[in-house]
View (tube, rainbow, N blue to C red):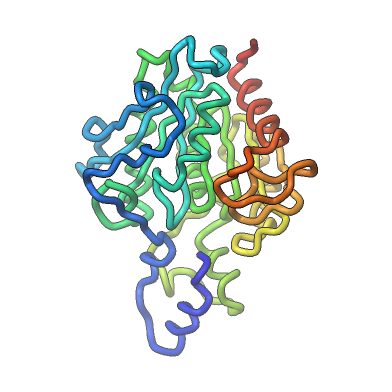
Length: 302
């Protein structure tokens, strides 16, 4: 998304080409890599899931499960709530570790997914292929009854390009809680914002993901987080999704002053801007927004 403007201009001057590769901007990893090696979650509670999750076409999807034990120091009343985490472009599970650790520390059980083209999941990133991958991951996660999970105990958290997948999943079967961080309205919106011309997205990409067309099917609790200083995916994307989410209950929008595309969890009125890894910690506002929505949606309390 960040480099599309000059690429699209080159396409107009030089002729047509498919730009799905630039929209998805995959980030593969070596097959033997431990993508959670830098995690602060105890190693005994980190489980790589590679093999059990298979997409409809047979693609083996790599994922990491962060689980809990009663004495791990996190809020035990949240352990039986699962969050399926879908990251954005040009990242993978390894680069997402700080956010995953934070959600685990809040007490939730987390399954982070690398759809095809990302991390150790093989294949070329396409909209249909990635959606099939995250659907398979969702079914697997909801089936982990040994962790107290079920279809009614798993929410979805999407970030950036991952929000398109998150909303597509939620449109098929709405979770009780859906969190969208720095969301993208649609592939068309990416094209429109990257090139100041009124041209259809299918001129450049095969991907047709459209959260704006799907968000009205979300009937559970919805939290949209967007930085007011986001110049890559402008906050108008989040505002429009909030407007279109007419069936979500509650439907909450938090526009974060000073936060850009990468620092939404790190910045608040009382927390100075920091880098994407939130090295100085995650803001109490962010923690409050997330836990309040999810705890209420799943009716969990201390």
